[in-house]
Structure formats: C-alpha cells, structure tokens
Length: 188
Image 1 (cartoon, rainbow, N blue to C red):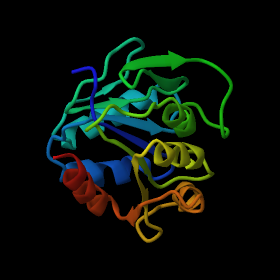
Image 2 (image 1 turned 120 degrees about the vertical axis):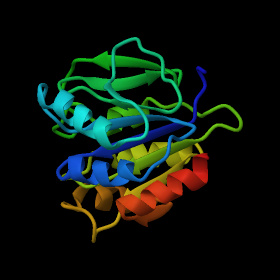
Image 3 (image 1 turned 90 degrees about the vertical axis):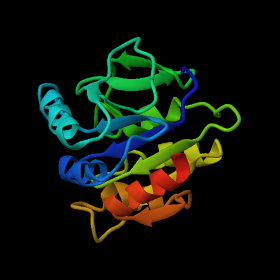
C-alpha cells in the first residue's frame, strides 16, 4: 500500500467551509488525500475533527514518519511544514515560513516525485489569500499530474486559486462539489 494515488489540497481563508462542501458528497477514493490548510497549532485538531464528521474517509492530523494509506485524509498540523518522502512517508519539519505561512502548500507539493506507472497525482488549490500553492501546481503539472483550482464564484478569497491559474498549469477550474466529481472521475 506504499505507492498510492495522491491528492494534495492547498487551502487557506474560507477553507474549512470549502473542505466540508468538497468532502460531504465524496465517496472513499482510491487515493491518500493530504490537506495543507494555513492554520495555527491548536485549531488544526478542531478542524480535522469537524471534517472527519462529514467525510466518508477517516481524517486525522498527519504524524511524522507515518506512511500514507489509501482512502484516508491526512491533515497537515499547524506550525510545521509537511513533506512526503518517496511519495509515501510523511515528514514534518519546523523551519521558516514559506509564502508567509506554515504549513505551506508549495513545500508539500514540491516534495512530490513523479509517480510510478498507473498512479495519479492530483493537485488542488482552493480558496485563500496570497499565492501559496502556485509553484506547487506548476510542479505537479510538470510531473504529469492533474491540477485543479477552485473557481472565483465559489471562493471566499480568490487569491490562491487565481495565482495557481495564472501559472497556466491548471487543468480544471470549478466549485468544491465539481472538484469532488472530478476526483471521482480521475480516481475511482
């Protein structure tokens, strides 16, 4: 189970509501899902518990050294950068903020490697301020992954999705429920 399909989601302001909209209708997916939400330590657990209440897959804070498993949602804890080693093992690191945030979607996405044959990597950027995740989306596209950004109409703040879109590396722009439909199409 080490080599999973991976969905990596970067999100900030308006994120908890957008994530609930995305996961409320989503069946379990043949993928490990990693969420990088800009959040301070202490609030991360509450948001993970709230998401776990609506999602069809278990949601937990990611732990250092843990291996990704399919049909699970890993929530990056506040105050750390999350990286993946070999697309399979979670590494949590302290360090300087990137794009003014920690955890950073760019740090997590840039740690991804080209997947093995028949495995998919999907990068998703949802509502939020700033440009975190734009370079990560460009990286995922370069690896042959599929990239999705939340549309302006459904975003609380269109900064992050707009920055991702402006890279020219976004395959699909849509609302959280349509993002869910696209994930089902790609992974199940």
